[in-house]
Image (cartoon, helix red, strand yellow):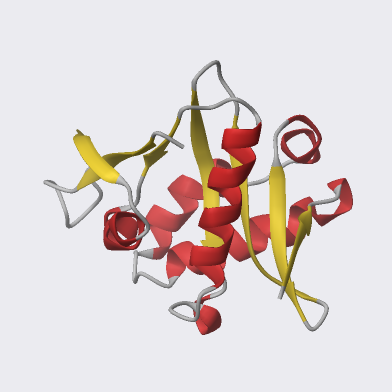
Length: 152
């Protein structure tokens, strides 16, 4: 597997990967449609933010995007093709993202996580510092964990 910077012409492929990965968790189609805008990666995002992808045998199998700030950067996206989940792709991308943020001067990386991904981020070293309400049809008490990787 190779991790390399994303190119602007890969925005559509990254958006499709994010939608496929989100749908893996069994969310209703109408919820996925509500999130389509948030899951869309634009050429502007790729050009203006650190965005890297994982490639295996010439196929994009995962990616991440960071939103730089002064000391605390935000992980905007981290998605892996469902077929390759639990095979180290996500961990490799997360480690790369933390290294990228540290090289950029960040002392922390925050994650507004999907509830299904919380255990992944905790296993990678994140700490939970809060949660925000995120109800969807059928899950009125759903929350999104707020996580942080500190002391990069």
